[in-house]
Amino acid sequence: MANPSEIWVYLAASPLLHLTMTLTAYLVGDYCFRKSGQKAIFNPVLMAIVLLVVILRATNTSYETYFEGAQFVHFLLGPATVALAVPLYRQFDRVRHSAPAILVSLLAGSVTAVLSATLIAWLLGAPQDVIASIAPKSATTPIAMGVSEQIGGLPSLTAVLVILTGIVGAMAGTTILERVGVRDAGVQGFALGLTSHGIGTARALQVSEVAGAFSALAMGLNGLATSLLAPLLVHLLGLW
Image (cartoon, rainbow, N blue to C red; front, side, top):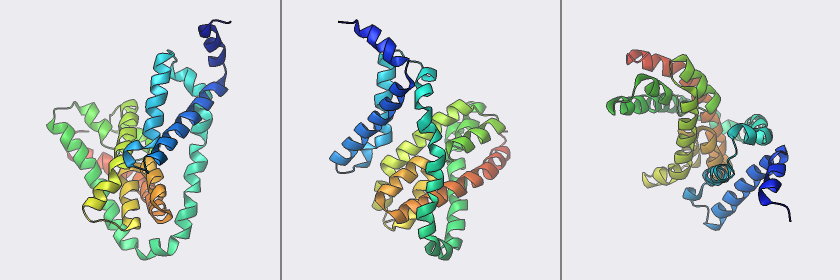
């Protein structure tokens, strides 16, 4: 019998191991999510992240080594984002008729997302670079990291905050909205996409195609709004 550690060293050298590990972790998370009756707390993304972190820590595998195999999944984020245009196209008439409400909601939501995060961090005594890092946390990761770097934040910290924001929004968003009486699928989806970007959009698609379409729209529009509003608001607050 070969030494188990030697077998692991051999397997770890193959990029397919970490790709398979990533897909398996998500399938496990998705299975638990479905068995729970689709309770948001059993979010598949969250469960996959926790499972992967435990495995990587237990095997002393660096992120760089892991990403060599998992980067194919990262590449598919592009096509997956483009594919969100399909449900949006199917709901185009409803989106067009809701344009005024969408624009007002976008402005209010984007401003609130930036101001609430920065003011809370400031009141808690966070340093300036941390405040700048948290300001764009509701935008999708590439945009948020770019904005963070522009206004003096730490892009790596921003990436973590963006993922946490998305997971929390996906877990609690629909429940909170229903508790306050918001049950329209389009409104729920727009709120999830605006506050929780891609992870929230994935949750919205689980609710319905209408929610997914409005969430995808909100995610894209909020990325643009945040890139314009975050530097302005942070500057007006005297933090940049």
